[in-house]
Length: 451
Ligand SMILES: Cc1cc2nc3c(=O)[nH]c(=O)nc-3n(C[C@H](O)[C@H](O)[C@H](O)COP(=O)(O)OP(=O)(O)OC[C@H]3O[C@@H](n4cnc5c(N)ncnc54)[C@H](O)[C@@H]3O)c2cc1C
Ligand SMILES: NC(=O)c1ccc[n+]([C@@H]2O[C@H](COP(=O)([O-])OP(=O)(O)OC[C@H]3O[C@@H](n4cnc5c(N)ncnc54)[C@H](O)[C@@H]3O)[C@@H](O)[C@H]2O)c1
Image (cartoon, rainbow, N blue to C red):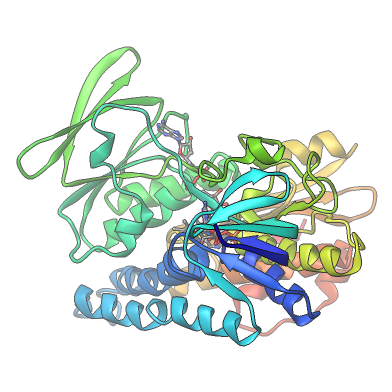
């Protein structure tokens, strides 16, 4: 068997793996990277980027639906085939461009999952490879649901590649992915039912806002079935029959497609981590502050697959760059959780940064809660939007913002203004002294902080 040695072998070519590999190669280390799918990772190939290309069309349709009779007389017709072609222009180039960028830096590429043989050796493409350091950046994959008929379940990959909008579809899971695609497909004319074993959707988001989002989605035609245990999927002629129990009673529901959006788990099953003494749990590879495996110092893990991350693209990139620095300069940088905003691209968007109300109340002695509805305000009225709500949490002693939660058409952008305010530890008075453009959604943020 052929053998080879590298300074660094990276497993996974998403944002985390690429960033680490490039940082090491730029410092003159010999680097290789492997991926068992197309190069470029989830976000660019089958996640955030193609998703937003598609969702902008359902957003456009929803926006014009709201303005129908107020100036819009005819709704735009969405040509889904053309939309898919447009999306392909972005996505199809990603794997080749990623490979070219990496090769230009003299990084060797492998197209298979490696398997650890011992603490410093892997097998890949029939070669035995040793390395001074390994970086595991294999991301997350959809959680498999152990139910009869699970072979009929499809994942977000299939939604992104739909050739036509189905007449009906069911989602198992009302988290980020379920809620975003349920909204999109519903606006595009698909009859959607969302099942979750929880008692509400988006359990990590503020319940005051989630309840209003749920109502809006119901108006768009989405049906929610909470506290439901999905027990089986049965293939019919054209449709699938989903079997579930609710309060101990058996029910069924028929739809064309059933999408598994029940969460994502670390992609570590093929790596044979036990042979290399790399500890992991359900949340991923267990790392120390330097993102180094606690049990095998040759191994670093970054991005979704590390147990020190949240599965979001900006955090994966940050962790990849920290691992690159720690390998090249010797554990110089500890990972500290930054202020991390996140948005669910529903209609309207729900976005959040910092503490929830419950956590803020646990952490600080006195909290001021600014909470309300701006559906009567200028912006919502102008676009004839029925839903626009917020909750901002302020530490009363320091007058600083410790959490912000927004539900609005522009929440994905305006939440970033709260990120800056929180990073600067601005007081509410300082924030309100800022001048923002008018009319804008940003200026509403100051209004939200009125007594
Ligand atoms: C539908 C969808 C929408 C999303 N939308 C957003 C969003 O709007 N905003 C946001 O911040 N985040 C979003 N995310 C999450 C975001 O995509 C991830 O957090 C991010 O891509 C993680 O980057 P990563 O480099 O850690 O992992 P990944 O990008 O997943 O890269 C891991 C790579 O490792 C490869 N791999 C896996 N196992 C092996 C193996 N055994 N051997 C070799 N290679 C392997 C994979 O093929 C992949 O290329 C979304 C995710 C999905 C699925
Ligand atoms: N806009 C974004 O930033 C974005 C978009 C998509 C994904 N992501 C990232 O990807 C991660 C994964 O997203 P996701 O939507 O797959 O997971 P999620 O964890 O957000 O949601 C999973 C949902 O499925 C439900 N569920 C789990 N098992 C179930 C079962 N057996 N039956 C019924 N319901 C079940 C859970 O209660 C939960 O509501 C997210 O945590 C997020 O960080 C981010």
